[in-house]
Length: 217
Ligand SMILES: Cc1cc2nc3c(=O)[nH]c(=O)nc-3n(C[C@H](O)[C@H](O)[C@H](O)COP(=O)(O)O)c2cc1C
Image (cartoon, rainbow, N blue to C red; front, side, top):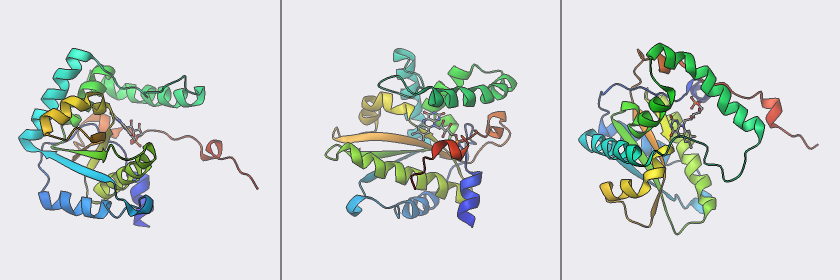
């Protein structure tokens, strides 16, 4: 039942303390995470763990790139999305607004610059996929990401998936010497949540499950 509790409690944190995470803890988390299933057990995921001064260097580079190119957080849709979906995102942002007001920050700036800084977390984990794989293997990456968020929670750590960083994949690869044939699919901020920060009191809503199911029986 601990799993159900973890699923209910887990949420994205957007402010972290600078307390470092022991390497053994990260190793233990990733060992558990790599128990995730994958198609024909390919285990196609590759983890790049960036910590300490290197993580700060990565954040500085991403924020510089953001200031030059101004790529902001968005769904990245390739054609107009169904209204029901855009409404969910709009509702989430609306519910976040009182926290931004309390913090006296501009929401866009907080989310964009925060994402590029991994919200101050001491560790950034990048999950990469070799470009020889078809798009279908992104399902495996999604699974391992889900495991990572839950296992980190079980270890008393907070996370925030950061998709926005992939807008600057080239800069990331150059800085971290990640080979050209690896895709940086997603980043994850990992650290101890700063529980004094108002934004960490925010818990995002969910659609009523009945609206997501079509029964055929
Ligand atoms: C693939 C993916 C990419 C995300 N990218 C970002 C991001 O770049 N910046 C951010 O602040 N949150 C990001 N998030 C966090 C989502 O906004 C968050 O998961 C969602 O609002 C639900 O909230 P919860 O995680 O607290 O349940 C991302 C989440 C996922 C799954």
